[in-house]
Every structure is written in structure tokens, then in C-alpha cells.
Image 1 (cartoon, rainbow, N blue to C red):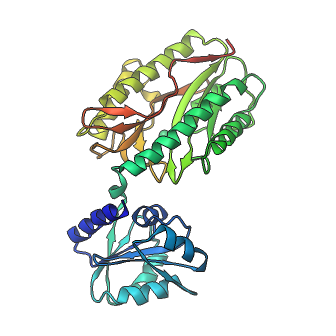
Image 2: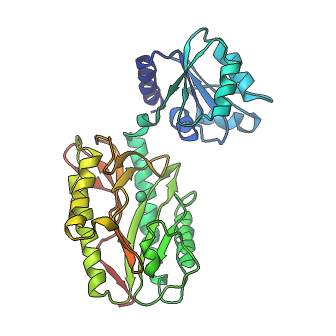
Image 3: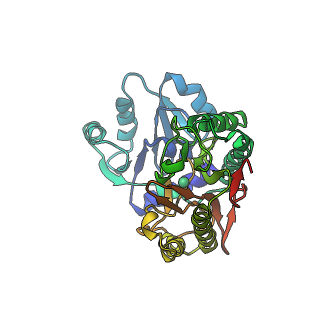
Length: 356
Ligand SMILES: [Mn+2]
């Protein structure tokens, strides 16, 4: 599994004529080595790979990254990197330009006098998930689905958004989630018009629409789902908005397929919301990739350049947000296949009227 990832990395290095690459972004460090520690860097060339880390992580690194030579650094990780990188000779060495700060770049230039430092980005190598990753993602999705099911009964007038968020997060942890995938969103009543309304001390009232957007993290892999429920009987307007979003969501899922662009899939859902007269109230992209990071490529949006391919995983999450009234969003995760996609999220999408 790691070997296959390294082979892909080697191909990218060859394409850019790199004699080595320094990997510092935590998710890429983990992806290309298996090492889950919070500190350290990878130095990879086409013949060998080293993981440089500190005293705290030596044993863990040996266990988790058997394909790597583990190098312990003392005071300065840069000095140890320099010692090892300078052995590569006069070569082009890639660094992650979307992560390395100006300060670190300046230090690299100083300590690697032989190298020509080349800016490079490698996140795209993580877009297509392997079987192992899909298994972990499915588990993260399953945890969130079960937790959602379990907490529906506590949602009633009088409880706060924060109580709902805490209960969800507690149930997810009990089911094996390391932490919430992001700050849990519970946006009720008029707060539902805030697409990213974090759970607050607001008390749930009868008639509130409640948008709940949350996820689990299982062995580093994130899940992401959103459901909107109503407390009590839905009004005609609530039902109307909900059905538009649901129609747009189902059409978006149907449009996901290998070879389609992220822009085209977004347009399918967006058209439905626009045709219903609410286009200006759907101001965000339709979806995003999910993996070791909660928001990653490919993107489904009007400005996306992504082309979907088998094994990618994306969210499909249209919404309508009406100021001073509230909002609805519905989100599932799907895996792109040759002929369409497989929906991972299993929670139902018929409007739930709680307490009815
Ligand atoms: Mn999402």
C-alpha cells in the first residue's frame, strides 16, 4: 500500500526531474509513510526514503513506517535534514510550496547549498482512494450515521444546540471516532441561514428547522454528513424548501460519474435551485473531496477544474439559506465509479418531523 503510493510519488518526481523531495505536510507525511506522529519530515529519493523525527517518536516511527530509514534528530531538524539531503549531491529537491512558509524556505535555501529547491504540490496524489482508505472512510461514515440515529430522540424544545452537538460527538467517540471531523454545526431556526453556524447556546424551539453538519474521524479518515430536521410539524414553506434541496441533492448524486467535471456536476444541482427561484441563496460549492483532510480535492463547484475518476470520494451538499428565516442543507458522501457513484451515507433523507 505505501509502496504503491511511493511508486506514484516517484513518477511525479521523474516528471519534474527531481532528485529528492522533502515532505512536511502532516497528511502527506502520513500518507506516504504510514507514520501518524505530529512531528517529523520525509526525505524521499528514487532509491531510498528517510523519516526524520525526534526522540518521542522513534519507536512509533519504526513500527508504523517499515519502508523508511528512521533518523533521529537532536536540536535542529534542519541540520539533520541538511546532512542527509546534501548526500544526494547537486540535485533538484522538491518542497511542498503550498505548506512551507517563507521562513522555512529561507532556512532550507541556507542549509541546502547544493540543492536547487523546486516548489511542488503533491496533494493530488491522494485524490483517488485505495481499498484500504475506502474501508476506513466507510467506517467513519458508519460511525456518524449511527450516532445521528441515536441522538434524534434528544432533540426537542428546550435543549440547546450545544447539547445536541455534545451528544453527537460523545456517541461518535463511543463508536470509535478519534475526534469530531470539524467543529460540529447545529444551526436552528433563523440561525439555519448561516451555512456554517457552529452549535451555540441557542435553545431549540417548536417549529425550528435544524441543520446538523458533522463527521467522525477513523484512523485519520474523515466523514462528513448533513441532515436538516424539523421540530414539530413542517410548514408548507419548510416542506417546499426542503424538497427543492432534496431534489437538487439527488440530481447531483445522479450526475456524479467518472469523466464528469466538478463544474458540470455542480451545475446540475445549481440549476434546480435556480429554476425554483432560490439560486442566490445557494452561495457555496456543491461538494468536496474528503480523506485525511476534511476538505480536499476534487471540488464540485462553479470554478472547479477537477475531473472525477473512479475511487474519488466527494460530498454532495446543496443548500438554501434564507436570511431571518432559516436554511436547509442535505449532504452525503459518495464514491465515484465508472458508471456513476455509490452512496456511503445511509441515513434517510425524507424530512424528519420530530415529536410528531
Ligand atoms: Mn461537507
